[in-house]
Image (cartoon, rainbow, N blue to C red; front, top):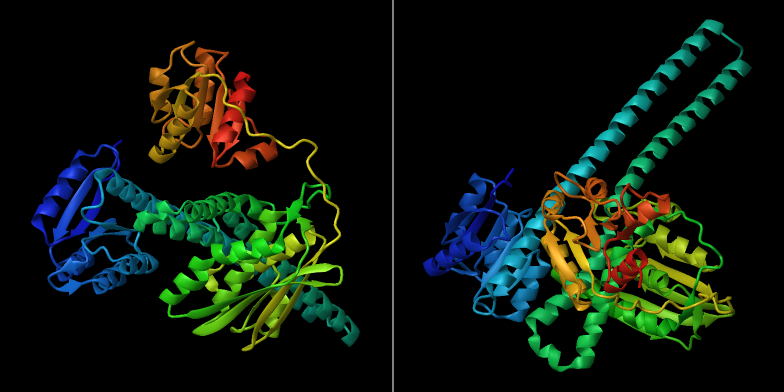
Length: 563
């Protein structure tokens, strides 16, 4: 069954560019079929948006009836949910950054973009739209289940209330008995409210296990620094600065990959012997402030908010801890502080020694908290940000501090700002791994069948495996893999799990029917969950979680096929 065509609105006043774009999309096999609608003015484009559904917009900023950033603002206000790729002859870096901050999927300069880059940008935009629709459907389904369960509990509660009232009228007991009945009624009401809260928390917990609003926060430095590298190629001439940007992108991507597992392990008790490492707090703070700059500076300025960031570093000794978790905690505190400032304000990040504690304090002069909010701010999933917050920030910070045997202190006052201090003990035992794990060595070249329906993941796999000189055969899905498979033709099969028609579990079973000795590795985003549960589908030798690295692929191949 062929996929539905994608409705593309091209707002461009140059007929030659329209013709070239239409031909290029028709000739690109890696993009879906497009139904293209071309308009030469913003007015015509807005009229088209009012008349029909549009999946993607390619927009020129210089048009007969509009120019520059005003053009983009008019279009995104008319279609806030439609991905927009700007293709403009305006090479102004400031305009490019501003359009991306306002919501553009990408900003491409005419004459400096090849077809491959444009197609890649279009694929990203289509995939983003698809994921947004999936998330929306999941959230609507979960909210409907919560409402149904809440309604059922309320009905039960009403029936119980009715029964108690009838008994009171029938028995006509003394005042003392009436008091007992009132107490029982209050206890029942409290129990019912607790059941409702538990059911809602369970539904929200399932939702948070698959999606997390904080994931977008983790993506901010990835988008910001990669955009700078794309817009300013001259940065490659400064190796130190280039490496710094790439390290920040890498750390952010690794942290993003841990978001789901951190949500899943929100209440997990950590082993006291968990490996921890030396941490230089001042370097960690400086890294996090730079790491979060796209949020507290660029995004804030785009929203009309000016934030003055202050760093006050004391003479703090090296401590022992989990660097990734402490970095996550400080990131959450800076994000909360930035959200609390409405127009203009200051964030101060301070390190100091207080007795036996090394202390990191993040202060702001923003909105502060009321007494009610302060009392509940550490509850998981409690948030005052509505749909823009996950309610995991301070609760996650509290869990991290507890795992470091530390203390969390919150000072706040409505209208006068908030100060949150993380105190970590300076003298804390450091449990190091018994044998540091060296990077996996490349295995000998093998004959590999790679089965993956996502083009970008397939490309990364091909590049990784080519590094070790493997002979790679590609299949777009499980059905295609079965058609090209032959016994004894492949040393190993690497397959995705979630694929249409024939998924990875089913493919592994079919391959074992053909060749009982065939070795199969399953690649899946649910790898951690499956490994924790001890789940190993029939016909599968090993599960590797996504996102994978070159090192994790080498380890998997060596484990299954031998070094």
